[in-house]
Image 1 (cartoon, rainbow, N blue to C red):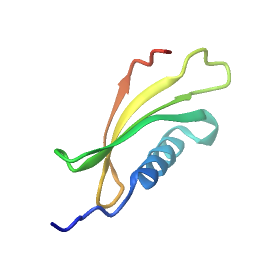
Image 2: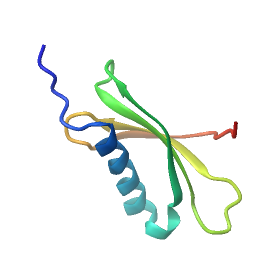
Image 3: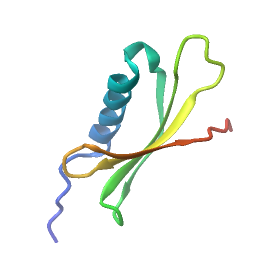
Length: 86
């Protein structure tokens, strides 16, 4: 079986960070953190879970689950999720 993966998990995570910086601006993605990066073979994508503070005065972060195309690194879907501190 030939592995058609063009990007790895690190490239998928960087694509997500770059996407949010383009959409919200560099200074609106404060404290960007990854908390899960996994390959979803069923949907042929990377699923990247991350969070960041939208501004300096924000009391809680925005958390997202983002799907990244495994071949070209494009953003397929994003979903805002509830972040719970453990």
